[in-house]
Length: 159
Length: 161
Image (cartoon, rainbow over all chains, first blue to last red; front, side, top):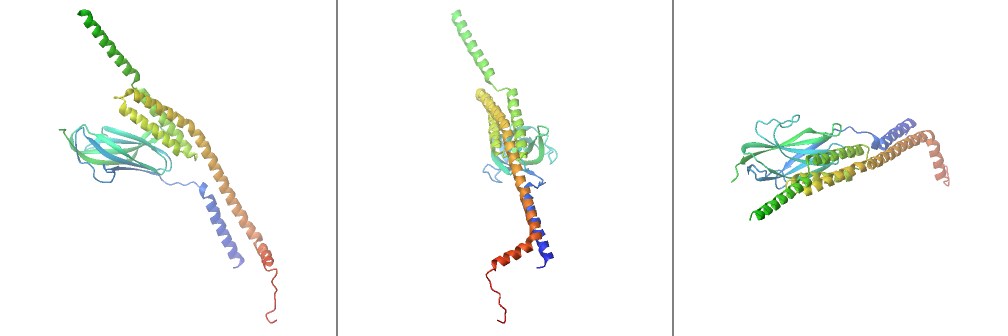
């Protein structure tokens, strides 16, 4: 190996070693995200109730995951809408809120918790809308994350 | 007959008033709920800040979740057991305030750990650069000296002899 090749190899090895040494303090700029999932009464995706009686309890599970790169204070709002209710990634549903759940998650942590709901109105093709809100530390208020989920449900009158 | 009825009615009225006053005195008010919620919000801001400083906030997050659960429990039981609801709210507020207070020390520990990591990284990188420069400048000479040292006992003979 001539002197020039040896010097180039040495410089490359030194460069890689310096990068490895500085890696822990190099700031990363990855985009974080949050997860929301609705699970059936058996804690799996499926077996969702479709017909319930007015006032009867609906048992579900809710999954929330935090991959924002920092701790997050979440609020899951459950709203009861219908086919005309508009909800999107930018606009939350303008429908009555029937329940809310709050939780705080560290980065890269998730939680699955039981949700018990009771519907007081009857109707067909109603939408149980689950919205994920997160606490904004700058404004000290909850803001809609744009993450939402829904279940179609028919509520009939009680016996 | 008349004094007896009057006495009974008076006793019933007193009992009703006592029940009413006790209920009002112990039921959790919306102000108490707001106070607990605001305390949790402030505590989360402190925890978030400690996390940004590199502190390990998992313990604080666990405590805040306990406070949140107490608040949600208080909301559910306020109509049926207002005394317990008020106690839960008070505990939630105290817990959140404790988390806020503990956040500063977690943030300091995080900052210190981050500083140590930075010093180690920069030190290691500097050492690598210095070592590379030394190898480039003195490598040949050191290699030759080492070679001579390792083979000092070898005898070189002519191929023909």
